[in-house]
Length: 359
Image (tube, rainbow, N blue to C red; front, side, top):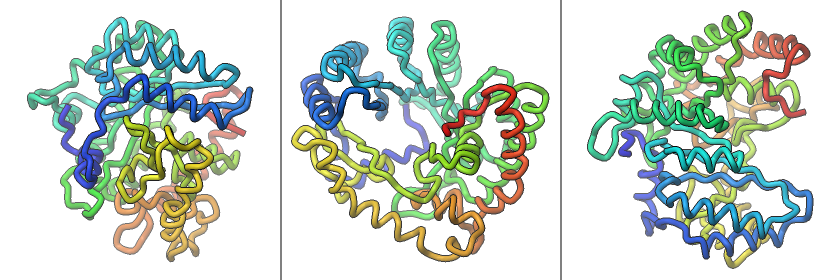
C-alpha cells in the first residue's frame, strides 16, 4: 500500500533507523518471557499487532507466536487484536484469526471513490474491490472485525455518502481516526482534518446514527461508545480522551519500546523489553507523560465545562480535533450531541446491551 496520508511514514523519516524490519520468533519469545515475569496468574494481557502491515510477517510467524504465548503465558488471560489493510487475507488467515479469537481491524476508508483516492497500492491502483472481498471473507469465517476509517478533510465533507456506504455494506462496528498533520507541520496536507471538519462531520453523522438507533438499527461508532463510557460510567476506553496519557508499550521488531504509536521517535525510546521488564520500562516513560500533561494545563481548557472529563484531550490531535481560531470544536460538538447521546444510551442500555459500556 501507499496510503497518501500515512502518518507513520512521517514518523519513520524522523528516526535514525527508518524501519526495524520484521520481528523474529526468537525476539518474540524473549519479549513474552519478559512480559510474563511481571504478571501473576489471572492477570489480563492485551496484545495488538500493527505495522506497517502485520500480514507481511507471514502466517507462520503468527502461528508460531500464538504457540509461544500458549506455553509462556499459561494462567494469563490473553486477548489479541490485529490491524490489517486486508490485501493478503485469505482462507488460511481467516481460519487462524477465527480460531484464535483475534479482534481484527480492517482499514477501509469508505465508498470506492474516497477509499481509492486515499489508499492506492504500490502500483498506484485502487484497492477497494480487494479490501471489500477481504471483508466478505472475514464475514464468511465468522471473524470478529471492525472497520477503521481514516477521516481525512475530503472524506469529512461527505458524511451522508459515508453513512449510506456503512449501511449498504452492513458494517456494525466503525472507528473514525482523524487524519493527522505531520509532526513538524500544521494542516499543510490536503488530507489533514481540521477541527471544524471533525465537528461538522460528527454532527451530521450523529443525526443519521440517532435516527437509525431509534428505528432499531444499531451501529457502533467508537467515539459515541467512548463518550458513553466516559460520561456515564467514568471509564476511559480511548487513549487520550480524558487528557491523561498512559504508557502503551509500543514494541518495535527489535524489542525497543516507545510510549505511544504517535511518538515512535528516538527521543522517546524507553529501552528494550528484551533487557527490561515492563515495570522497569514504565518509569522511563514518565518524561513523556509529563510532556503530554503540559498541554492540558493551558487555557482555555481549564475554564471549559468539559475539562473534568476531557482534560484537554490528546496533544497529538490538538490541530485536527480540538482548537481552531481560538475555540474548541470538540466542545462545540459535545454541546450538541452529549445530552441526547447519554439520554438515548441510558434508555436503551436497560433494554439490551448495545453500547459497549464498561462499568
